[in-house]
Length: 554
Ligand SMILES: [Cu+2]
Image (cartoon, rainbow, N blue to C red):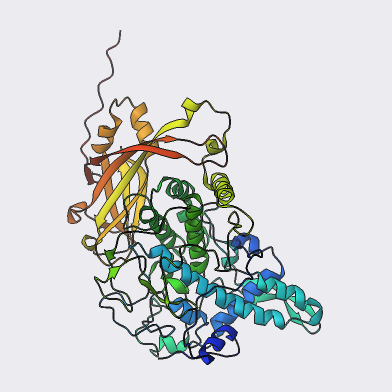
């Protein structure tokens, strides 16, 4: 195996290797029990934090420059996701028979696998940051050491603010670094803008590795595109805020919430669209290389936060309960039975066993938390209340915080399109499925390269087109919807995949009565739901009846 520990940076790993356990346990950053646990920060707030920001930027840079064999190097950690197809953490040899990265997509373990993944990145980040803090001159050292101890993986909240973090744009960032017995402000190479692949990876030392056709990660390349402007235009063209509010409040169980394997709107589908939009395609959209774009861990920290929020408002809900047949991964074959107790390779617990979906279900004891989830000082009910308030404030419709509204005004009918498709029929992936109702764009679903096969599901609200149909005088808006849905499937380069080549694609219209909250710490309550299969046509091929003649003049 190709891993070697670099002892200088790897206090924690070096200890476990020396003790002969041979695995880096993914524990997060240890925090003494009962004391306040550091919160992951919004990256746009971390920028203003002074010493913590100085350390984060330098730690990201140092990780990118660590020897590519070092298990805490950015190369090794980012490379777990897809390419290169090498063993990490002595987690077992290659046994996959299809996709050979470690990450699962389109499966119930999508969220549970990515939680210890971000946690491993975080413990490496903080370990490197602590070393940097120790190098600050005496009069600053304690302040920087404290900042390192409470540094955690920042998140990019693309739903509250659908633009790329401004700090990922410039070539340099101004930070304070040690200088003699003081500190000085320097223009520091920005490690959040791009990552250069190690030369030995590009020349084949780790096996198959193309870098996605580049020796560094790129985003929205000119002259056709521009970062951040094109990325921001992409992001703002989708209603991420509403999607997040809907997925957090509408999902009835973990499997529906978590991944594209469950029906209707889900977190993975929203996450997929961020991969499509955030860098205009390129490595960030390719599962083999997406882990290397510095946007990745900010994005996945936020995905993890969405799951933590959902758990806070659904505290008694288990992770998925049914077993299923998994797809190929680095050390798991197609068809392996996956349960909530299946190993999440290559992530070990401290006891030498692999993490499982059950061992990562709660963030308690993982050394990090999020605002609202201060579990060391709040009851479960208080956490639910504060997280509900945050969800309403950040993602809710303006009316969600209205008080003293008449009860009858709070009941609404909401409409969702639910899409399902067998991805093997969409041979050129990733692709975007755009849905139109009465000629107007109603929503979109990104279908990724992964999962490699099987059914993928997603959904979004169609309240606006349904309202238009209702106001247009359609007494039966549900059947009006059904007879006026059109679909356009586009590849990343804009080529059309004809609907007739994707016969499995189905669109259902789900309607539900929803009681909207009357207080800021309450969330919508979904009542009975009903579903109608719609007849989708290729966009532009729907023959619409001519509009009715105007009524005769009196
Ligand atoms: Cu992702």
